[in-house]
Image (tube, rainbow, N blue to C red):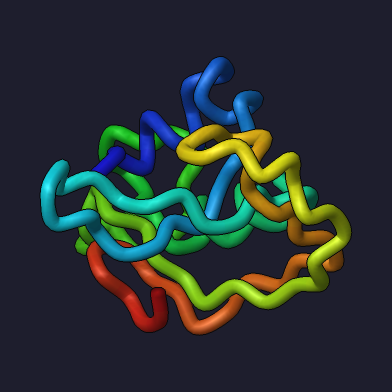
Length: 112
């Protein structure tokens, strides 16, 4: 569970892109890779709005009592590329374009 600071303040993290994660695998306990997101500006804007202001995240604009980690949101988009099919690799996952973020929130908001 990344902090909002790591996800939205640290340049290397913000510039690396974002993904929708699937459920956790039983054996490894790690989330499955879901979809790559094409419009990172949309994700950054929604994440900063859901993150706590005045805490570790210097670019977040949400209320100061919000959790500082665990960004979750409902994501809608159009599959624009199926990926290369590589198992467990970022390039193997489908790419979503025309991304819309809604119904989210910090620390376990609504939606997967």
